[in-house]
Image: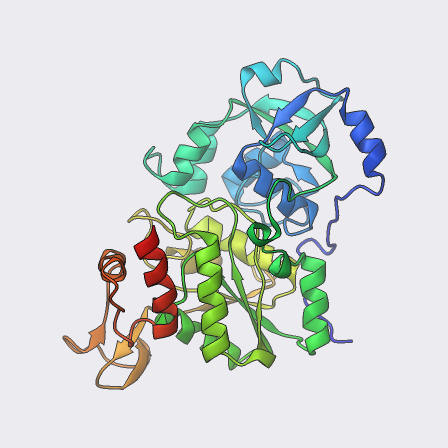
Length: 388
């Protein structure tokens, strides 16, 4: 049996109840909290162990320590507070030492929380520290501003995490928990694994990063985020078809695995890069790709801020090896993919396309240049763009 990297904190958390019927019966008499889309994603990530070592939504000491130091109160690295924010009306029905039933927006009972603390949601502490900006137009900032002014902290006991959806919407075939992903790696004989985080289709530059990583590890996990994203992002089902297509045509099946991560995007740039790395460690990966403007949005973060933030931690605090990549593009002169490290910049030589230009071409039924996007992937996107 091959030895994989240990989970963050040393133990893979599992918060699913062994007695769902008894928990349902208990929940019927408890006050009710209806989760937002982000909170439902967070609940699933806690339940399956993807947010190990968290066993529930954070308490006040952890919240403040995370915002100020990027560590939990016990000293473990953790960059983004995972909060259960509620409004004043909901808070008035809750009590510390009590419990509450956590429901999906469709009414499904998901879990019960043991309420250890109810504390003010200090948005003035969270927002500038986590996002590096207080601009209400930033999607992550906007989401926090719209949340309740109280936070409920405590461990959760979970019944289900994927209610009210057809199997296709849940990506059941690809929705592997960290324990299942680790088992798949061991079955394949992989000891070292690179992970690629994505919320966009994979174009030629992304493919280049993935294949560079494949050269130095036993396998590659293409691990798209399929939880809540901002309006305007390409829908998860379209992206999944793009991933399946490019893997089928351009990746080696023995060294590539596609599964999904049901997390919500925060668009927190550097801090979210750390979160993504720690989360993937729980899934069993040893190496994590961080490219240009990882988890960024607009121009809120510097091009390589998400790489440089890892240098702020002491040796051994983050066990995953971070693979830092320069911006890559196709070079006509080199006849291949290059970066600033591998080939000099020559005016007019490299193929760069803005997202706006790509969307414009797709909506017109035109493929972007083959040097930018594989034609099979472009065809999937054209079909989506013209039907949208």
